[in-house]
Amino acid sequence: MESEDSYTEIWPSDAQEPNYAAHLISLSAVIFLIISKVVVYFTPKSVPSQSLWRWKNITVSLCHALLISGWAVLCFYQSPKLAEDLISTYTVSSHSLVSVSFGYFVYDVVDMLLYQRTRQSFELLGHHTVIFCAFSIAVFTRLYVGYAVVSLLVELNSIFLHIRQLLQILGYSKNNCLYRLNSLINLGTFVVFRISVLSWMTRWIVINRHLIPLAFYSVGSIGLAIITVMNIVLLYRLFRSDFISKKEKISRRD
Image 1: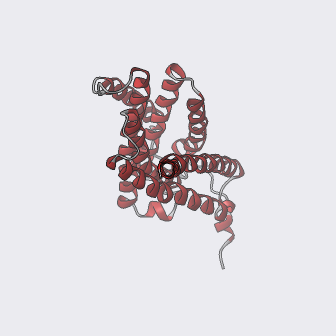
Image 2: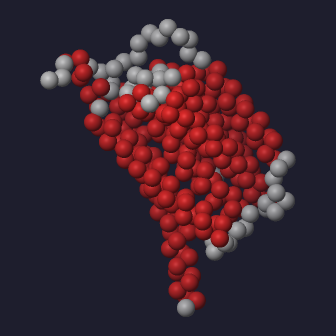
Image 3: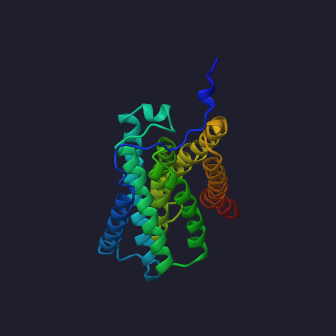
């Protein structure tokens, strides 16, 4: 029989080590800004002038996805306990990971507000706002760091999602072998690292709700609901664009 303590809400405690989250977030935002400036000099000449900002933005996002996805996997490899205790356990590496990712989203929000105020940008701003609320808890309280690292596994899919966008900007046909291969990998990783991960996270937060303070539980539940809906809509758009519409064109030719 479990003790009453196992059903006690877990709140932040006074940690001995200083928290450098704010410094890491600021440094990360500046580094991604520098990357965005460097990327401009490597933009292919075939990129249309009206797509220059989008190319730069997606390329920086791809750099973030490559760094963060590999780092997230490494965190669980280096500290398996992080996966066993998603609330209290954290390592310097995992805490730094979440802080660096937070910094990227800060950079991305500022970049969009300054240079690209479109409907799609405002959708992303809504997504980033949810990320800020959730990640703030992890980086400043050093609780739920493992949970935040789990959420960053979605960046494994973001790699192929961003490659797809870059191929579209370059004018690749949907019948191109490279585009088709990336579409299949993108769809597979979307289901595994977005839909499945989000489903698991939802199940975890419901099962462990007795350990989570109401304020944190509310932020997590609302955030997950918003992100899940956004990803389901995105999955539908991807499937319709890369698979259904292509079949419709083929059937019309026949």
